[in-house]
Image (cartoon, rainbow, N blue to C red; front, top):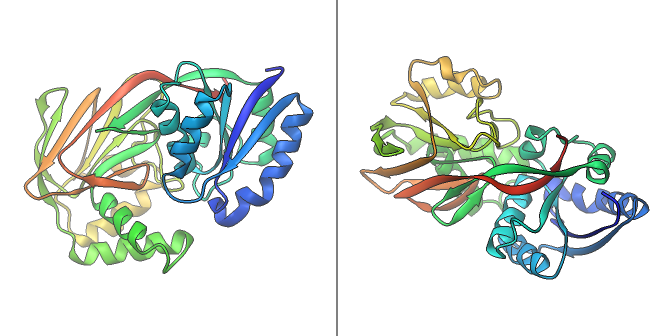
Length: 298
């Protein structure tokens, strides 16, 4: 891309500190390639949104998300908050625990490969999902996985890494029950008793869970996957299938596509975007086609 004015939002805890350890090497390679790179570090959940918004308003051509999917989500939200989606590109340095958005776009997971992509790539237009007023890049949803995300967020100081999610799944499963949900797909009713409703802009989240395996981030629509009224034993049968995207063959799983999805329920249900809790139902999901510029292979 030649001479580029970039700014990096570094998540120092991403990948259990891997982002902080590896980033100086990536920064040096970018500088050797002719980039000027300003660096800031996020200090708490949500801080990267503020930082990216400020950097986008300060003249950066590219804002780098140095971390995982959570960092990519927050930086994307910051670009949107600054109304800079048309002017500023997102660059991904995938150094988090989960890097599903980068993987979906064909960005290498190793630092050297990701750096080569940044130096050679041109902005590619991809879609963004939106849940009420919060943007997402991978998968959002309602129900069980959102309840797990809420538990993990509340107890994140107790357990770290993947083990935290395993504990969250078992703790949530003890008391969680499928609930009657009212769903509209582009205005058409799709009501059912459901364990969860997932809405995908891209296929995977949470480090390879292919919840919406046919979702594509550049097709202008959202893939909607509903897991129905299943028993606890069914959960353990479906979980291994999620990593291969094979759960769509289960008789209690239904799939649809839409540009707008609204979900309400008989009781308030947790909502998440890219694994981060963002309140409870009712929620309106939408897709904004080609909203985000991201540096990625063609």
